[in-house]
Length: 493
Image 1: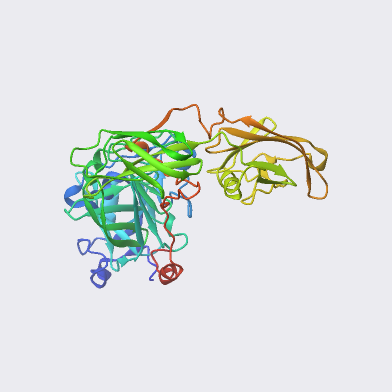
Image 2 (image 1 turned 90 degrees about the horizontal axis):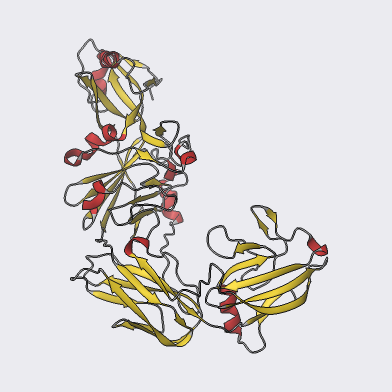
């Protein structure tokens, strides 16, 4: 690539295809970068859909500042505190127009050469105008597009699978283009995050960190079909073709009463569902749901999920979790391991271990599953005396200590309490084993009569109990597909 900071007018004729900027014979074009506010960055990209594209203010202030190379918001710029304002992007600007901007030059920083892609800048009436990205070689990527209507980060989430390593931080911007000719601009943090694109269309308007979600500009995305996802990198356009329908969400409520494990039934209600919603119910193998009642046979204790879907395909699913519980305690602690109790089956013990929710060691409680879990017991039920939390080793006293453990599992009203003394030779001596009520543990929540969720707060956790597995929303990238695009200049720029 030719390394020139300034390109004389005489050379412009050779570069017309790459730089369609109209200049006079005396003018000189300079290349650099500018801090471009979102509205101005996207105006020419969105065409007839252009409108105000707001800055993103965040309660998680430290993340706003993570805009360096390889960081999650690479290529963005901020106010130094809590707001992402727009995009740092290469530009081509006539020297005369740059002079007109004076100090209000969008933080212009000159580049040594001609960038692979850039926006043309012109100035009229003292205001800068930015073209669409000038890219002589736009690319297409064959990525997987997985849509979820159950996400903590808004109403919808698109996961782009099969991306080359590191590409998920390279987006300077992203557009969803629909079959009806509209384009929807996406911004860092609120919409663009580590290879995922999420947004609110007005049902869920706050995410877990307390950040308010802008939704007005995305309301009309509901019921549309996305045909292209256009990723804007420093090196230009990367387009992903798709045919993804965005089902309509609504503020409905689904409520299921908790029940007893085994064979039986429990009641459910669905409110606020549109009149033309063609309801289809699903729980798990061995379950049936109709006319406000869920029936089941030989169901193990644990958490289950009822999903109501629209057979016409117009509307999004609505779902919620519920609990099937038991007073039985099917495990005991023996020889350093959770094993089946004398009156229990192997399947009962395996179910308890599979659904471990919390382990209290003395006065400290540790989550046994989910985010931040500490694996004090492994999948076989064996205790790990080398287990560590973020605060250090859990069994810090080693062989010299005696510990009281309270072990709770989802769906079991009673917890197992044991007193143990580790030995130097990786064995344990159970001093005392008792059953204790687990009704006050956060995971069991057995004092609740029912579990309620709105369409804006659908559970994403699939039940782990017995045969109650529900397909988890997961997207595994093909190694061959990733290898095929590793050489892409735009994926590495």
